[in-house]
Image (tube, rainbow, N blue to C red; front, side, top):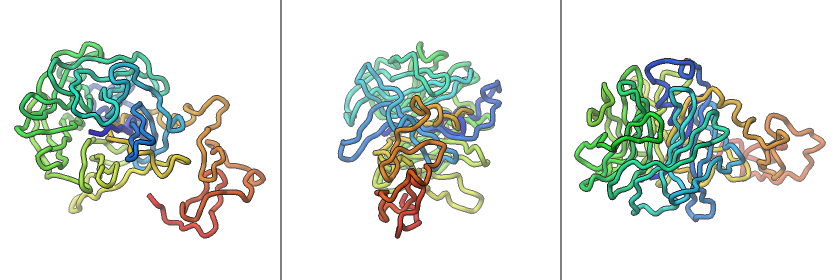
Length: 378
């Protein structure tokens, strides 16, 4: 149960996927999206760089990601367990955003918790209205919350993982404001244990991605109405590596393509499957996080949870820069990397510490390191 969220062109990844196909068009949905936004948390194998808080990153193609706010949190839970996993972003009907997350800090997965974290945001630059909302009264957890707009009900469906006393299922609460959450009910109970559900709406059809805990593979199901227990599984199981979870469905902004993202946490991480072309198989691709001095990618980001459309995504890196317009992010050589400008040659000097092993241009100096290999090491 990892948490991760990315957002599509001017949408957040998970959010973008859920928002792109929402029925009644309005100003928010009539926009053309050109970037992706990702919400994630950090978790490292040796526990040295864990961050159970809300982080954001942006991407123009859904593959290469740049962390915002120098890879520091943009919001941190202060109630409950004071930590989060599985962050999810949804672009709402009015064009604003809501962020949802599991109320859990660390790797303690045996605790019961009836609450989730919630924030509101108008532009993904500030997160306000922080609260914990209660979903049910059961002696179980409330993991990996996601949401979509149910036009037939005029409400948002909040889908999450829980246990009904017999097995793990997906449950749902319907809400209009993410404050009054309504009654909990079973959303997807196929007769075997499932985990981590995400819903994408396309042309009036509802697609549900989930993990089957019986074989530990990812699947996609379909429903014509999106109502509880109306989904029928379409695909065979998908798995990358030894273990995978946290499926997320995302619509590409540049092509008639859908992506199934999943956290392949053994041994890879952050893998997605583009929808295959006719006669071809879906090939897994690895999401790459460009994080300057923090290494090749952030310590394990957790589940790729959400990509929501956002016309502001392209400008987010500029908006997130500290006062003065310069980023404190460091490049390979350790000097501050300036967003949107190159260093003058007189400022470069011969002391660049980037090594041939790193095999890339220094982000600050823009010089190829002598002897460096040109092949990407992602």
